[in-house]
Image (cartoon, rainbow, N blue to C red; front, side, top):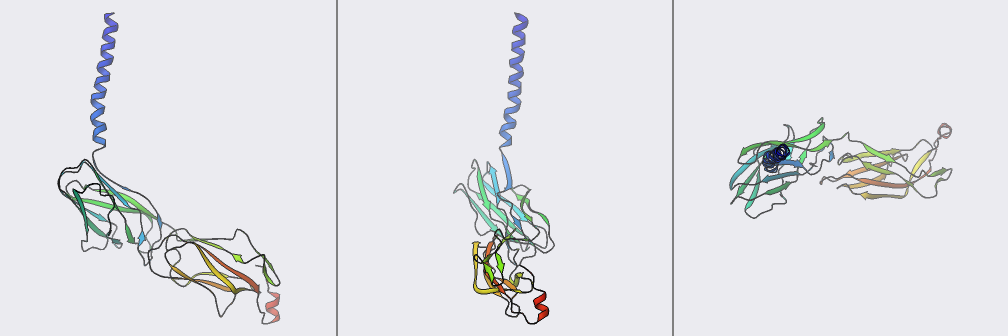
Length: 280
């Protein structure tokens, strides 16, 4: 009986010892400053417009009264826009200010806290002009300057390959008189915002010899607008070429477009052109 009683007491002591060790560790894990991304969008390098990257989530738990500051930066050669709007401030006792430093690739965030609060969070939208040639992950660096805004990092985007996916799920029947059973409809999808560069020749569709685009029923359907305006036009000097022109310099989002038109026989100039006619 004594041996069993001692064994039970030893087991209870071991359990109490484990609890005494583990409880403080669990409490400490929830305390401190953390940085993370909310999203990690794919973006394109070399665009004139700023790309919308993932928002930076900042949480401090608890936040002591006083002044706290950190520097937020991207690599040299990038242009990091200072956020004009900071979201999700949880208490009126705390304010965050964003300011420039004189360097294009960074901004400074400053927190002033009137009294200690249990926890506070901030969400900062991140936008940047990405230089041509950049690749891989977009890593935001945070350098602690004062108080509880310690150093850290967050991956807020990934630089894509800048491709456009063009598909035709229901190919039309093309006869001697042109397209039948409706117009030709193509789906153009950007794999990242800004893939379709602004200009007069953003995207071209070229038919084989013997066929021409019919501009009588030409239209463009924007299934997912990309923050720009477009012009769809048959080349006046070569009716085999259908050209998509992108206009506008607003904030870009990933677009999906439907250029819709018809196909007609091309007016042949000589017999050699007639022999080279090919199907669509």
